[in-house]
Image 1 (spheres, helix red, strand yellow):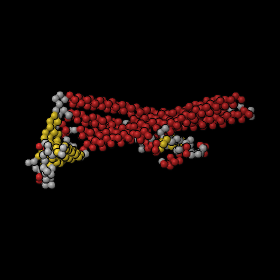
Image 2 (cartoon, one colour):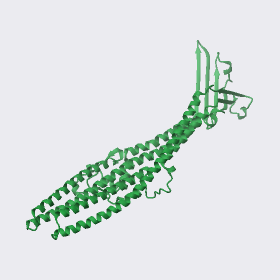
Image 3 (cartoon, one colour):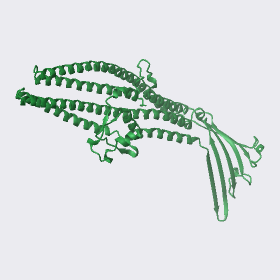
Image 4 (cartoon, one colour):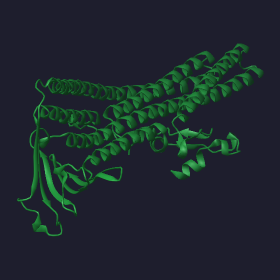
Length: 465
């Protein structure tokens, strides 16, 4: 792939004329490989996953151990009113349980009697727990669970976004291939018309053809050249459109050289490149689709939020118990005879905020349920329609291939009759026009077939290779 870029891209760095360059084929696989690796929108899609991982890291921070130090001192007119130090180390855990260790040292003339501690300070180790609202589900737990789901959802959303840009890039490639094939058709028939005109002109000069035959041959030649010029402009426009998707590292856009051409045998690689070769409508499980998985993760996140809001209907009952000791080096000094405990209970009387939050959470879940069902039906119908459309294009391509073959036989026979003097230039041109139309129709059918393959790739939301 690197050799391909070095030898093919960056035409502005090469001072070689287009006539001196040998045509180099850029396959669909090589093209999409660069779109997937370097296109800015693909890189932007990767930021979605990076953002979700950072949010997960942030939510884990709610369980980080924490040190708190509270120091107060008051001194006035050479009197030390108080000097208080309170240092705490806390370890939050999953089920609303928090372990903590504390050191307290207080002294002063006007110290509150309940703050009196031994001269060397007072140590405590204990635990606090919310046995109602925060036990089974709390804010820390819900944030972490939702963040984990968001990482998985972001990965699915990234895949959908990357798939969309690869779909657009694929259609641009197929349009480029179509314009190239049309240009090649007109080039070949301009050459035929030129040879025919020169032959008719020489026949006229030796008296074998009427002058009007040279006029008709010249009209056909100019008509072919006119169509070739239109096809050339369409090819240039398609090439520039394709270049919109080609980038290198460091966000450097690149432009195709004139000698870079599409792979005319794309039909042989399209299924393997777009990962559609193993698709089977009968065995396809819609529930594994990235869009459905993204919605499932979204629904699970909303369910966690619902459980949190439902849990908030419970009262807040905080229990705290601490063992006290002034000799922490002796483990047995922490016993039940020296302790500090407490309980805190609170409950809003009407619970209007909590009840409203719960109803809103249920409404969001219901809305997502409707979206899941609608998306499932839409995807199934789209996939089924595209599958049938592909089958139809296979049949149409077979019919048109036979038509092209028969028109080639008719033109060949008419040309033989013309040079034997048994036909006219008008009939030859007419046969040739029919053959050109049939070949252009074949190119257009191939383009529609490729475009429909790309639509299947897009609706399946897979990633190539």
